[in-house]
Amino acid sequence: ATPTAVTVGIGRGAELGLLIRNGEALEVSEKLTAIVFDKTGTLTRGKPDVTDVVAFGVPEDRLLSVAAAVEKNSQHPLAAAVVRRAESAGVGIPASERFNTFGGLGVSAVVEGEEVLIGNQPFLEERGIAVPPKAGMRVTVFQDVGKTTVLVAIGGELAGILAIADTLKPTTRTAVAELKRMGLSVMMITGDNERTANAIAREVGITDVHAGVLPQEKAEEVRALQVRGEVVAFVGDGINDAPALAQADVGIAIGSGTDVAIESGDIVLVRDDLVDAVAAVELSRKVMSRIK
Ligand code: ADP
Ligand code: MG
Image (cartoon, rainbow, N blue to C red; front, side, top):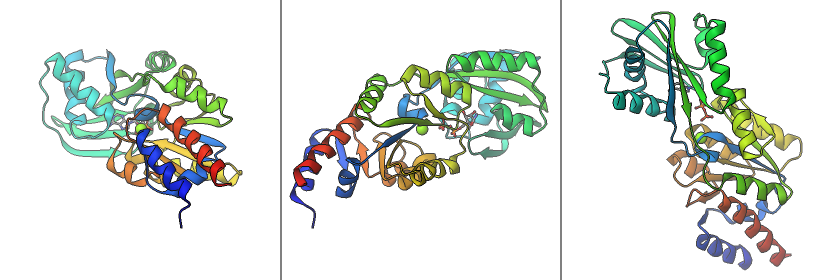
């Protein structure tokens, strides 16, 4: 039977904006040694905007319209940012065919008879697109200020770079500082590249960063920590995060996250506020001290 203190704790959690889906999560939270955050949509708002458009050998409008034609098919937050930018620039968005998505890498489709690739640099290079040093340098400059860069190739040639920025949630820094003060190791995991990840981590106050992690590898990273003896909480919002939320000792899902993430979480942050994750750990410590 669930001890009364846990039941009371679940009720108290509800008042604090925590949907605690199993009492065990509350018991385990007291023993946590590490807390791992997904970046996009968890530490950041997950509502990115295109801030810079750099075209190579094609007009900027054409770059945007072709990119949007492909991204219209994608559910990714980066894709929404590209489509929004094309719409606000008032460029027409042509039809596309043979759309394909490569999780954690990018997307492709055929637009007006030309093959279009959009994604990170390794994705384009793997497919034989040359990224000249001058373009590579533009990419690193954007990444070093925390922007995610998406490269666009049209007909086998690099046609441009789109720099995309996402802002931190207002309480991210405070929540991370509190969790560290409580003695937890705080880490970040992201599919984004290392430079962007490090720039965001610096802003947040996290030094332990795992970047370039493919969707299917997030749970593996959590498992590796557990093998090392860590008791791990994972905080995430995306479809990609569901396996890691399930693997973690305590899965903490963002309330506005995808349904799959919420279903995989033990605790749901109803208000999307990371300070509520701190409240969850504090609550579990209080509840468990009452049981012992
Ligand atoms: P995150 O862990 O930040 O949610 P993902 O694993 O979803 O990131 O994606 C990792 C990287 O793959 C992105 O930073 C981007 O470079 C590339 N990518 C994924 N999907 C798309 C897309 N629809 N358009 C462009 N780039 C994409
Ligand atoms: Mg996310």
